[in-house]
Each structure stands twice: as C-alpha cells, then as structure tokens.
Image (tube, rainbow, N blue to C red):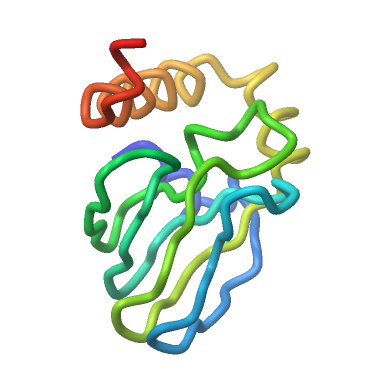
Length: 121
C-alpha cells in the first residue's frame, strides 16, 4: 500500500494515538481537522444516513470528508486502536505535489463511495 509505505518512509507525518474501546474517534458534524490511518485494531464507521461498517488496520478514516469542513460520519473504536492522526491541511498540501498519492486517494475514495447508498444520489 502506497500510503503505508509513505508513512514508513516519513513522507506522511502524523501523531500516533491510542484510542480506548468504545471511544468516539470522529463525530458527525464535528470540525474536520484530520485524517486517521488505522494502524491497529478495528472501528465501526457510521455514515450519515448509511449502514454501519467495520474497518480494520490499514483503513483511512475520514477520507470521504477530506475536502469538507465537517465530518459526515461517526467512528467508534470497537477495540483499542492505534491511529496515526494526519493533519488535513498537511495532507491537502501533499496532494498538490504528489501525483501517486493523489491517484491512490482517488482510488480509495472510489472504493468507499461504492459502499454507500449516497453514491447513487
């Protein structure tokens, strides 16, 4: 995965955080300040008006809202999580100069859109 490789090589920087089980990582409607890369554990993602789904390590959390001011989904830790918190502003700056990262994130957004009922609206 290109994103994980970029993290390992220090091209994508963030703060590693531990999140306790049953803790809300993201709440729908809250200001969108960061994207989260799930390093360890699993979480329940509940999109506004959509069906909840479980994501595992390697998932990018908050990606559908990268260009929005607020989150459109709620994310709850199912078990203890380790997440890399990546500044939204820093990631947007990286997207301007890193074509492989842009392509990768477009691919990931496409996959996530196909899983939501909102993709048909």
